[in-house]
Amino acid sequence: MNKIAILGTGAIGQLIHYQLNQSIKKTDSLCFIDRQKTRCHKVNVTTLLGDILKYDANFINAQSPQSAFTDIQLLIVCVKSYQVIDALVPLINQLPPRCHILLLHNGMGPHLILQEKLHASYPTIGLSLGTTSQGALRHTAWHIEQTGTGLTQFGHHSGPLMVESLKARLLNSIDNAQYCESILPMLWQKLAVNAVINPLTAIERCKNGALSAERFRLQIDTIAQEIILVAQHDAILLNKAALIQRILDVISLTKNNFSSMYQDITHHRRSEIDNINGYIIQRAEKHRLSVPENILLYHKVKDLESI
Ligand code: PAF
Image (cartoon, rainbow, N blue to C red; front, side, top):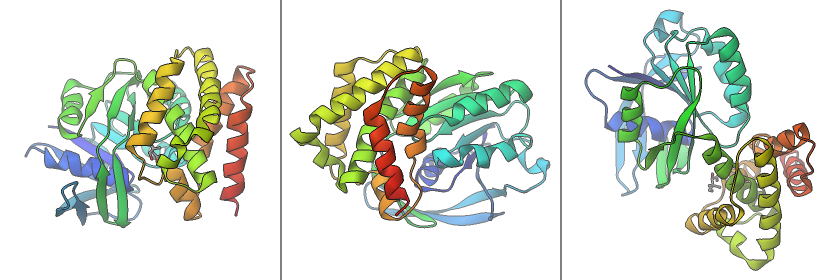
Protein backbone atom coordinates (compact mmCIF):
# COMPACT_ATOMS: atom_id res chain seq x y z
CA MET A 1 0.00 0.00 0.00
CA ASN A 2 1.19 3.52 -0.87
CA LYS A 3 -0.18 6.53 0.93
CA ILE A 4 0.75 9.76 -0.79
CA ALA A 5 -0.16 13.26 0.39
CA ILE A 6 0.14 16.46 -1.62
CA LEU A 7 0.78 19.79 0.05
CA GLY A 8 -0.39 22.59 -2.24
CA THR A 9 -3.63 22.77 -4.18
CA GLY A 10 -2.42 25.10 -6.94
CA ALA A 11 -2.42 24.12 -10.62
CA ILE A 12 0.61 21.80 -10.39
CA GLY A 13 -0.52 20.21 -7.09
CA GLN A 14 -3.92 19.41 -8.60
CA LEU A 15 -2.38 18.13 -11.84
CA ILE A 16 -0.03 15.75 -9.99
CA HIS A 17 -2.95 14.64 -7.79
CA TYR A 18 -5.05 13.93 -10.88
CA GLN A 19 -2.24 11.94 -12.53
CA LEU A 20 -1.62 9.86 -9.38
CA ASN A 21 -5.35 9.35 -8.97
CA GLN A 22 -5.59 7.93 -12.50
CA SER A 23 -3.26 5.07 -11.61
CA ILE A 24 -4.51 4.49 -8.07
CA LYS A 25 -4.88 0.86 -6.88
CA LYS A 26 -7.52 -0.21 -4.35
CA THR A 27 -4.85 -0.58 -1.68
CA ASP A 28 -3.30 2.86 -2.31
CA SER A 29 -4.48 6.13 -0.90
CA LEU A 30 -4.02 9.71 -1.96
CA CYS A 31 -4.95 13.00 -0.34
CA PHE A 32 -4.28 16.72 -0.21
CA ILE A 33 -3.13 18.40 2.98
CA ASP A 34 -4.93 21.70 3.30
CA ARG A 35 -5.42 24.39 5.92
CA GLN A 36 -9.17 24.70 5.38
CA LYS A 37 -10.63 21.50 3.99
CA THR A 38 -11.06 18.34 6.02
CA ARG A 39 -12.92 15.65 4.12
CA CYS A 40 -13.64 15.31 0.46
CA HIS A 41 -14.02 17.73 -2.42
CA LYS A 42 -14.86 17.52 -6.14
CA VAL A 43 -11.93 18.29 -8.38
CA ASN A 44 -12.39 19.15 -12.08
CA VAL A 45 -9.68 18.61 -14.63
CA THR A 46 -9.73 19.63 -18.28
CA THR A 47 -7.41 17.19 -20.01
CA LEU A 48 -5.15 17.89 -22.99
CA LEU A 49 -7.91 16.41 -25.19
CA GLY A 50 -10.43 18.93 -23.83
CA ASP A 51 -12.45 16.43 -21.76
CA ILE A 52 -13.61 17.63 -18.36
CA LEU A 53 -13.20 14.97 -15.69
CA LYS A 54 -14.61 15.22 -12.19
CA TYR A 55 -13.60 13.13 -9.21
CA ASP A 56 -13.57 13.25 -5.41
CA ALA A 57 -10.33 14.10 -3.67
CA ASN A 58 -9.70 13.38 0.02
CA PHE A 59 -8.21 15.91 2.37
CA ILE A 60 -6.35 15.95 5.65
CA ASN A 61 -6.60 19.20 7.51
CA ALA A 62 -3.15 20.56 8.32
CA GLN A 63 -4.24 21.10 11.93
CA SER A 64 -5.47 17.51 12.38
CA PRO A 65 -4.00 15.42 15.21
CA GLN A 66 -0.93 13.33 14.44
CA SER A 67 -3.03 10.19 13.94
CA ALA A 68 -4.26 11.60 10.59
CA PHE A 69 -0.71 11.62 9.25
CA THR A 70 0.61 8.31 10.59
CA ASP A 71 0.63 6.24 7.41
CA ILE A 72 1.79 8.88 4.92
CA GLN A 73 4.79 7.46 3.08
CA LEU A 74 5.37 10.27 0.63
CA LEU A 75 4.61 13.97 0.94
CA ILE A 76 4.84 15.87 -2.36
CA VAL A 77 5.27 19.59 -1.78
CA CYS A 78 3.82 21.67 -4.64
CA VAL A 79 3.44 25.08 -3.00
CA LYS A 80 5.25 28.16 -4.35
CA SER A 81 8.97 28.23 -3.50
CA TYR A 82 8.55 31.09 -1.00
CA GLN A 83 5.84 29.15 0.87
CA VAL A 84 7.72 25.85 1.24
CA ILE A 85 9.37 26.41 4.62
CA ASP A 86 6.36 28.05 6.31
CA ALA A 87 3.94 25.42 4.99
CA LEU A 88 6.12 22.39 5.61
CA VAL A 89 8.00 22.98 8.86
CA PRO A 90 4.90 22.93 11.15
CA LEU A 91 3.93 19.59 9.57
CA ILE A 92 7.24 17.76 9.88
CA ASN A 93 6.75 16.56 13.44
CA GLN A 94 3.33 15.15 12.45
CA LEU A 95 4.88 12.94 9.77
CA PRO A 96 5.78 9.31 10.49
CA PRO A 97 9.51 8.64 10.95
CA ARG A 98 9.87 6.73 7.64
CA CYS A 99 8.08 9.32 5.54
CA HIS A 100 9.77 10.75 2.45
CA ILE A 101 9.44 14.35 1.20
CA LEU A 102 9.60 15.39 -2.47
CA LEU A 103 9.92 19.12 -3.19
CA LEU A 104 8.46 20.04 -6.58
CA HIS A 105 8.58 23.78 -7.19
CA ASN A 106 10.18 26.38 -9.44
CA GLY A 107 13.45 27.87 -8.22
CA MET A 108 15.85 26.68 -5.56
CA GLY A 109 16.72 27.42 -1.95
CA PRO A 110 14.25 25.78 0.46
CA HIS A 111 16.11 22.44 0.13
CA LEU A 112 19.15 23.93 1.91
CA ILE A 113 17.09 24.90 4.98
CA LEU A 114 15.12 21.67 4.93
CA GLN A 115 18.07 19.34 4.53
CA GLU A 116 19.68 20.89 7.65
CA LYS A 117 16.46 20.63 9.64
CA LEU A 118 15.89 16.99 8.68
CA HIS A 119 19.50 16.07 9.31
CA ALA A 120 19.45 17.68 12.78
CA SER A 121 16.03 16.56 14.04
CA TYR A 122 14.41 14.02 11.68
CA PRO A 123 17.22 11.90 10.21
CA THR A 124 14.87 9.04 9.18
CA ILE A 125 12.91 11.31 6.80
CA GLY A 126 14.42 11.28 3.31
CA LEU A 127 14.39 14.25 0.93
CA SER A 128 14.05 14.13 -2.85
CA LEU A 129 13.94 17.13 -5.17
CA GLY A 130 12.17 17.51 -8.47
CA THR A 131 11.18 19.87 -11.20
CA THR A 132 8.35 19.80 -13.68
CA SER A 133 7.77 21.58 -16.97
CA GLN A 134 4.17 20.36 -17.26
CA GLY A 135 1.77 23.18 -18.00
CA ALA A 136 -1.43 23.71 -16.01
CA LEU A 137 -3.81 26.62 -15.53
CA ARG A 138 -6.18 27.11 -12.63
CA HIS A 139 -9.60 28.28 -13.85
CA THR A 140 -11.29 28.26 -10.45
CA ALA A 141 -10.19 26.96 -7.04
CA TRP A 142 -11.08 23.35 -8.01
CA HIS A 143 -10.89 23.39 -11.78
CA ILE A 144 -7.56 23.14 -13.51
CA GLU A 145 -6.65 22.61 -17.13
CA GLN A 146 -3.61 20.75 -18.34
CA THR A 147 -2.12 23.06 -20.96
CA GLY A 148 1.03 21.23 -21.96
CA THR A 149 3.12 18.14 -21.53
CA GLY A 150 6.68 18.49 -20.31
CA LEU A 151 9.43 16.65 -18.53
CA THR A 152 9.18 15.93 -14.79
CA GLN A 153 12.49 14.98 -13.20
CA PHE A 154 13.10 13.90 -9.61
CA GLY A 155 15.92 12.35 -7.66
CA HIS A 156 17.43 11.81 -4.25
CA HIS A 157 18.88 14.68 -2.26
CA SER A 158 19.51 13.70 1.39
CA GLY A 159 18.66 11.15 4.10
CA PRO A 160 17.12 7.75 3.32
CA LEU A 161 16.21 6.94 -0.30
CA MET A 162 12.63 6.94 -1.59
CA VAL A 163 11.36 3.33 -1.54
CA GLU A 164 11.15 1.65 -4.95
CA SER A 165 7.35 1.19 -4.90
CA LEU A 166 6.83 4.95 -4.50
CA LYS A 167 9.38 5.76 -7.17
CA ALA A 168 7.61 3.34 -9.54
CA ARG A 169 4.24 4.89 -8.68
CA LEU A 170 5.48 8.36 -9.63
CA LEU A 171 7.16 7.13 -12.82
CA ASN A 172 4.03 5.23 -13.88
CA SER A 173 1.57 8.02 -13.12
CA ILE A 174 3.20 11.30 -14.13
CA ASP A 175 3.55 11.80 -17.90
CA ASN A 176 7.19 12.05 -19.05
CA ALA A 177 8.59 11.42 -15.57
CA GLN A 178 12.26 10.60 -15.15
CA TYR A 179 14.27 9.46 -12.13
CA CYS A 180 17.68 11.18 -12.08
CA GLU A 181 20.61 9.71 -10.16
CA SER A 182 21.97 13.23 -9.87
CA ILE A 183 19.15 15.75 -9.53
CA LEU A 184 21.01 19.01 -8.71
CA PRO A 185 22.40 19.56 -12.25
CA MET A 186 18.83 19.15 -13.58
CA LEU A 187 17.53 21.71 -11.08
CA TRP A 188 20.29 24.15 -12.04
CA GLN A 189 19.39 23.75 -15.73
CA LYS A 190 15.74 24.44 -14.97
CA LEU A 191 16.82 27.35 -12.74
CA ALA A 192 18.71 28.84 -15.70
CA VAL A 193 15.63 28.48 -17.93
CA ASN A 194 13.50 30.23 -15.31
CA ALA A 195 16.17 32.88 -14.58
CA VAL A 196 16.04 33.97 -18.22
CA ILE A 197 12.41 33.49 -19.27
CA ASN A 198 10.56 34.50 -16.12
CA PRO A 199 12.03 37.95 -15.33
CA LEU A 200 12.43 38.97 -18.99
CA THR A 201 8.80 38.15 -19.84
CA ALA A 202 7.59 39.93 -16.68
CA ILE A 203 9.69 43.04 -17.42
CA GLU A 204 8.94 43.13 -21.16
CA ARG A 205 5.30 42.08 -20.60
CA CYS A 206 5.46 39.51 -23.36
CA LYS A 207 4.80 35.86 -24.12
CA ASN A 208 7.76 33.47 -23.82
CA GLY A 209 8.12 33.31 -27.62
CA ALA A 210 9.00 37.02 -27.91
CA LEU A 211 12.36 36.23 -26.29
CA SER A 212 13.52 34.46 -29.45
CA ALA A 213 14.12 37.92 -31.02
CA GLU A 214 17.76 38.64 -31.80
CA ARG A 215 17.84 41.65 -29.44
CA PHE A 216 17.66 39.32 -26.40
CA ARG A 217 20.53 37.03 -27.45
CA LEU A 218 23.36 38.92 -25.74
CA GLN A 219 21.37 39.30 -22.52
CA ILE A 220 20.45 35.59 -22.49
CA ASP A 221 24.10 34.76 -23.05
CA THR A 222 25.21 36.97 -20.16
CA ILE A 223 22.61 35.60 -17.70
CA ALA A 224 23.56 32.03 -18.64
CA GLN A 225 27.27 32.77 -18.31
CA GLU A 226 26.78 34.16 -14.78
CA ILE A 227 24.74 31.09 -13.78
CA ILE A 228 27.38 28.71 -15.16
CA LEU A 229 30.04 30.44 -13.05
CA VAL A 230 27.98 30.29 -9.84
CA ALA A 231 26.94 26.67 -10.47
CA GLN A 232 30.57 25.73 -11.01
CA HIS A 233 31.42 27.09 -7.53
CA ASP A 234 28.56 24.93 -6.20
CA ALA A 235 30.27 21.93 -7.87
CA ILE A 236 27.74 21.74 -10.74
CA LEU A 237 29.19 21.77 -14.24
CA LEU A 238 26.94 23.17 -16.95
CA ASN A 239 27.86 23.27 -20.62
CA LYS A 240 27.31 26.76 -22.05
CA ALA A 241 26.24 25.80 -25.58
CA ALA A 242 23.88 23.06 -24.30
CA LEU A 243 22.40 25.37 -21.65
CA ILE A 244 21.72 28.19 -24.11
CA GLN A 245 20.21 25.70 -26.55
CA ARG A 246 17.94 24.38 -23.79
CA ILE A 247 16.80 27.90 -22.91
CA LEU A 248 16.08 28.65 -26.59
CA ASP A 249 14.25 25.31 -26.96
CA VAL A 250 11.98 26.09 -23.99
CA ILE A 251 11.33 29.59 -25.39
CA SER A 252 10.26 28.00 -28.64
CA LEU A 253 8.28 25.08 -27.13
CA THR A 254 6.36 27.42 -24.81
CA LYS A 255 6.17 30.36 -27.24
CA ASN A 256 2.46 30.89 -26.68
CA ASN A 257 2.65 30.75 -22.87
CA PHE A 258 2.74 33.61 -20.44
CA SER A 259 5.38 32.61 -17.88
CA SER A 260 4.38 32.10 -14.25
CA MET A 261 6.27 35.29 -13.29
CA TYR A 262 4.52 37.31 -15.99
CA GLN A 263 1.21 36.04 -14.57
CA ASP A 264 2.20 36.73 -10.95
CA ILE A 265 3.24 40.31 -11.76
CA THR A 266 0.15 40.94 -13.91
CA HIS A 267 -2.14 39.71 -11.11
CA HIS A 268 -0.21 41.69 -8.44
CA ARG A 269 0.90 38.50 -6.68
CA ARG A 270 4.28 37.85 -5.13
CA SER A 271 6.63 36.31 -7.71
CA GLU A 272 9.23 33.57 -7.24
CA ILE A 273 12.13 35.92 -8.08
CA ASP A 274 13.75 35.36 -4.62
CA ASN A 275 14.18 31.66 -5.37
CA ILE A 276 15.19 32.13 -9.02
CA ASN A 277 17.56 35.04 -9.76
CA GLY A 278 17.58 35.74 -5.99
CA TYR A 279 19.00 32.26 -5.33
CA ILE A 280 21.72 32.81 -7.95
CA ILE A 281 22.63 36.13 -6.28
CA GLN A 282 22.68 34.45 -2.84
CA ARG A 283 25.02 31.68 -4.01
CA ALA A 284 27.17 34.24 -5.88
CA GLU A 285 27.54 36.27 -2.66
CA LYS A 286 28.58 33.14 -0.79
CA HIS A 287 31.32 32.48 -3.34
CA ARG A 288 32.20 36.21 -3.73
CA LEU A 289 31.27 36.23 -7.40
CA SER A 290 29.83 39.09 -9.43
CA VAL A 291 26.46 38.57 -11.21
CA PRO A 292 25.38 42.07 -12.36
CA GLU A 293 22.83 40.95 -14.97
CA ASN A 294 20.99 38.73 -12.48
CA ILE A 295 21.05 41.57 -9.92
CA LEU A 296 19.59 43.98 -12.48
CA LEU A 297 16.72 41.60 -13.36
CA TYR A 298 16.10 40.86 -9.69
CA HIS A 299 15.68 44.55 -8.81
CA LYS A 300 13.50 45.26 -11.85
CA VAL A 301 11.11 42.45 -10.86
CA LYS A 302 11.13 43.56 -7.20
CA ASP A 303 10.14 47.06 -8.42
CA LEU A 304 7.28 45.55 -10.46
CA GLU A 305 6.15 43.51 -7.42
CA SER A 306 5.76 46.70 -5.40
CA ILE A 307 3.52 48.47 -7.96
O1 PAF B 1 7.62 29.34 -14.76
C1 PAF B 1 7.25 29.09 -15.93
O2 PAF B 1 6.45 29.78 -16.53
C2 PAF B 1 7.80 27.84 -16.60
O3 PAF B 1 8.64 27.16 -15.69
C3 PAF B 1 8.54 28.08 -17.93
C4 PAF B 1 9.38 26.87 -18.25
C5 PAF B 1 9.41 29.29 -17.88
C6 PAF B 1 7.56 28.15 -19.07
O4 PAF B 1 6.67 29.21 -19.03
